[in-house]
Length: 483
Image (cartoon, one colour):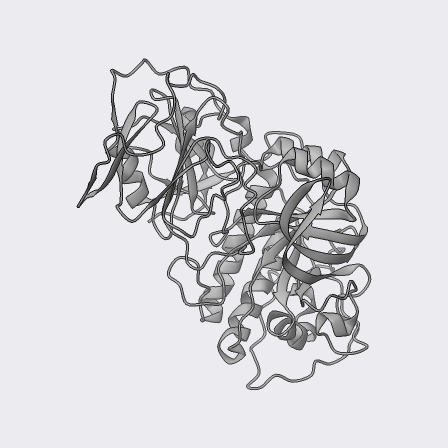
C-alpha cells in the first residue's frame, strides 16, 4: 500500500470533479425497493435510474421525506436525496466504530464540499481506488447524474463494490464535460481568517448547522464561537453543509471557528482506535496533523488557525496515558511545522491529567490550547474547573477552553440544536521565534513524548516555555492514497 498522503492533483488529474450541476436524471427518486426485493445477497432498489443492491442489514433513509434525519456514519445505511437540516443528530461526536454507509443524491444541487476528495466515475465501471483521511470519498457518477458519497470503517472496498455492481435502467447518456475542482488542490484559493482573540461562550454540534440556523443563533444566542468537525477517521456525522463558502460566511458574520479533527481514539477498534504503542501513536499523531492541515486549507482556513484534536475520555490511564501524550505532542509538533496552531480536546479526568503531568518535560511540544471537557456547569477556565493543579501556570494567558455542559437541546431564534457548551479564553496563535541554530552538522531533533510514570504524580510548577516552531511551511497539496 502506498502512503496515505499523495498529491491529489497528480494522482487523479482531470478526473477530479467539481460537485456542480452536470444534469440530473429524469423522474422522482424511488426511496425504497422497486419490487420489495430482499434476497440472501441483499436488498435491491432503484434510485434515479440506477438499480443497486445493498446488504440486507442496511437501513434505508429517504432524506427527501425526512430532511431532519442525521447522516450518521456509525450505522450501516443507504441515504437517498439531498441532506436537510439534520436536526435529529444527537450527542455522539466520535464513532466507535465507524460503519460502511452510502449517500446518493442528484449531482445537481450537491454541495461543493472541500473536506473530502471528490473524484469522477461511472456506475458499473471500475471506480478510482482512492482513500480519504476521514474515511470518506465522493464519486460523481456522470452518466447517472448522481453524487455518491462513500463512508467506510477500515476499507472502502465493500461500499465501492455496491456502486461498481450498480446498473442503469435506461441506456446511459453521454457524460458531460469534466471540470477540474480548484478547491481540491490545497492552496488553490483564497484563505479566510476564522479566529480572532475570543473570550465568551461557544457551542459545537455533531454536524455543521445550516446557514439559517447560524444566522438565527448569531442574532439571538449568547454564543460567539462554534466548533465544526472538519474530518478524522472517527468523525460520527457527515458534513454536507461544510464548504468553503460556509466557512467564509461564518467568519464574515463574526463567528470564532474551532475546527475539530476526530482522529484515532483511546479505545480498541480496528477502524478508529489509537495504538497503545507510544511510537506508533507518535506516527499517528503526525499523520493526523497532516490530514487536518490539508482539510483546513481546502476549506480556506488561513495559516495560523488553531486546529483542535478531539480525543475522548478513557479510564485506563496505565494503558493510555503514554500513547495519548505521544499522539498529542506529535500532532502539535507537526502542525507547527505546517504553519498551524494545535489544540487538544480532552477530558478532565484523563487526557488533561496526562498532559498536565508531562507538561514540563516537553513544554515546546504541548498543545497551544487546552480544551477540557468537565460538565460541571461552571462557565470558567479556572484551574479547578479544568482539573489542573491549583495555581499552575500551564496553559494560561488565553490558552484555555472549558466544555462545561454536554448533550442538551437548546433553542434560539425558534431553531433547536443538540449541542455542547463551552467557555473560551483564547488569544491569537503565532509561531514562537525560532531558537538559534545548533552547531553545524547537527539537525534539530523533534521533541519526543515523555514516558508515562508508573503512577500519576504532581507536575512541577515551572513557567512554561513558548512552543518552538519552524518557519511556517505551507501544507502539502490535498491528498488521498491508493486503496
